[in-house]
Length: 147
Image 1 (cartoon, rainbow, N blue to C red):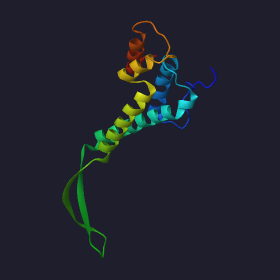
Image 2 (image 1 turned 45 degrees about the vertical axis):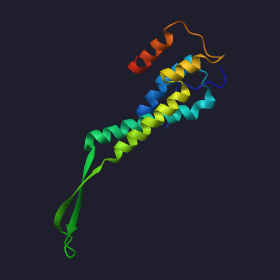
Image 3 (image 1 turned 120 degrees about the vertical axis):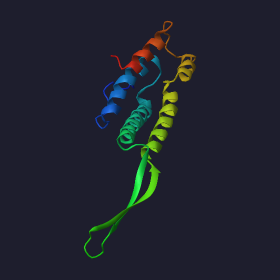
Image 4 (image 1 turned 120 degrees about the horizontal axis):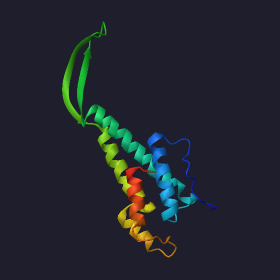
């Protein structure tokens, strides 16, 4: 079909983003009116997913709070004289996860990837007609990562 999204992800998408592309594009092509004109939205969804996963890994590695220290050096020798503990600050990954999650929800709604938006999309005049339960089955397949 002309204007159809390619199931092959763009080469510049990272691992998790490419994996999400390969999972959602076939679903979108079968269950919505998404076309190549919506490629930017699909890319943004995939990139935000990658950002969320990368930030989560940093959060797991460093924790939600990061220790703040100040190192004092001897001005003549450059040797460390003292390291003072100043407290904790929130790991920036927490904010990245929050922002990416909000973006995923917003973009997912636009693409019909939430239960509410799927229901609204199915009410559109050109919405694909599916047998009862098939959208639910497709979403179970999508979220389970099955092929």
